[in-house]
Length: 524
Image (cartoon, rainbow, N blue to C red; front, side):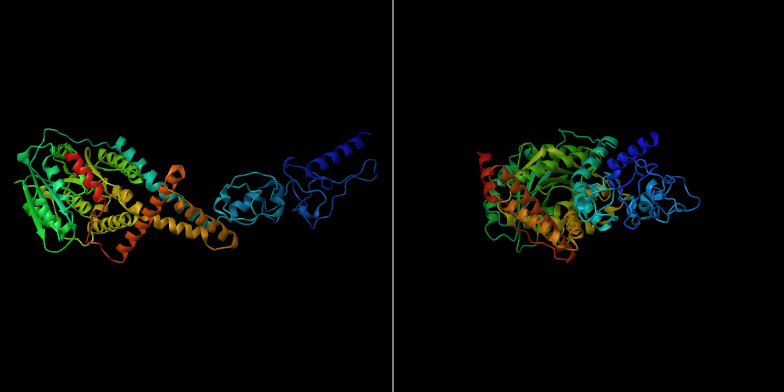
């Protein structure tokens, strides 16, 4: 009677755990692993209640065994233990398959085990899917892992990783410098202009009216091939501290600065643009850090009127403040910066950005480029997409040409400047190119399913760009357009650098009307 109850209980447990026609294999298998019976193995014959005859033997046979040919699976077989045991079975187990990068035997592929692994499938996100839902036999897809890393990791490293590194450097390697508000050396403000007749008179009056001693302030205006009477408009300011230099043809902003340096006087030369509005105390804050002998260049704080550019420049000012606290910043900004007169080198360099080139040349023999947040320089936002794209392309290509002419600054022996130039300049420029390569790695080969995914992505991007610019969806569309424009301009600037097509001529058509109204209102 006891034997009959034991047989009935065994059959019930088998049907509950593995189905009505399977028997639970003894050993280390749990009730949550439902294993399929091999197709080539015979159906196990269960001993019914009251049946006569000997019971099936459950003793381990001597020597190697093949559990596929036994009515009762061998508990010592590697298929059920999940470990590599070549003497027990000729097929590798789950652990052996992972170690040897081979396809595991079908006995070891559990149908309901939820284990997160690092194996990548046919989709970039399949590495987060449980092994039971993936196609059996998937291996590591290096191409898709690299593509996903390039697409996500590169922008994170450029816009989040580098600021985190600069923040850590400010805490671990802080380098304070002397700032003296009573330090007032003789300063010459240089304004390079091209066809700025609408702005130049108000700009000169505003510059000479800054909160700075009048006997220690001078101004030099360089007309770079102007054809609209910019020189006459500048002379209309009627101040003896003003010098106007005219160039017969347009030669570029760097050439205009080179022509203005011989006419400058004093210890410090400050550079600004005609469409930039300076605060009254901007010059005092700008020259205050030059009281420290180790400081060679001081960069002002650029402010933009509104829109995505305003948010971007708030982010830039925050990063520059972090960089300045631990050493030098990665180049001055052309809106407003000051250089010691002995360190100004405006030697011609085709296509190079004047602000980055002059500031980096000034610290070749030592010194620092620091950031003065109190020296506010306000600039109107770009009036249109084409002007913004052209200006951004010129900035990117100019930065690459400038860094190419100063390869020694990217050497690791240059203190902390090399990794700041790499993270702040080069990594951002390379980000759209690396992201494009990552998209290509994820997209190829273009199967029908992937074509549908990428087509949907392109349609979604087009919808975001085409959204109106008002309301909450409009803000998303504005940011999408701004990011797309910045990445395309970076690719265009990189292409100009690779093809050796510098942009020497410049057309400062950036918000003239808004800048003129702002300057005139400040004078009233």
